[in-house]
Length: 386
Image (cartoon, rainbow, N blue to C red):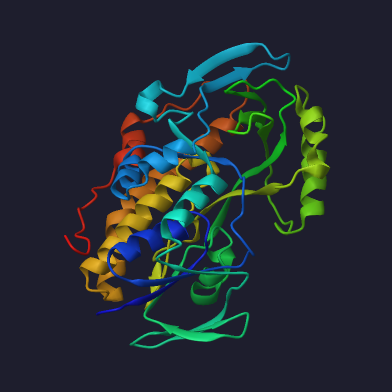
């Protein structure tokens, strides 16, 4: 198939990464994003193991490293701020708790956008309203009223993917709440962070602070156990009330952190969840990243899965001459063991957080960790001109 037209929903990380790779194979790519612009800030995300190889193959290693947080490591502290344990960014060959490639989600999104904006059509402030597919293509109607036809449509629109719901069914069929809630937001760096993250945990609850390139600011991260979660993730006022109710009495620096809650520019709170699906495609529509196989923030591998998945999905579709039946099937076969290892890491981390004080932590299977970091073979897919 020549001049294949691909629509990608979502312009965070997975979507622009896929657009970058698809363009390398000659696809005509459009990315649609419901927000009016790229979303700045966000949590610190990491690239470990094989994801670093993907970044190098994409030619983005220098740009991404230049935008990294350059966090030196992390201190675990007690309620009085005394350091109990220290990990460094160069531990485990840079693939440890603090990864050598740690970057704010918004900064990574910007790097990917800058690398694709001249070759890919980006549509902001719009979304897919409906689609109808046949054997030759997909007719898409956008919320703005415009209508276009594409050969393939890929949903890279996150945990709450509207495209997944539209094509595969209600989110309740696929989203599995892991019993925790996570929040993060930007605060002034009035805490003396000097390149080191700090974290305090007790009885399943955690509060922490991470440095960012702007030394006058920091990222606050708080989490707590919750057996269920039935608040609309878009109801910011209700989410802030929930965070205060669950964390206001936590101690350490938490009251000072929460003092900035009302004025933070980028508040986020949502359930810690995974997406588990038997298949990631239906006809000419496929899914990528959190929309298809969210491993949860507690896996530390969501960004890695998005980048590796984008590389594999684009490569397999191109290698199949854009035949969705063949390309999607090969993508799923290659990715699924890697995804399942990372989802197991996420579940193990949740169980360790839920462990009673004084009990022995669950033993980690080092072979599982290796499969989660490097457990996928990456073919050298031929690019245009190669």
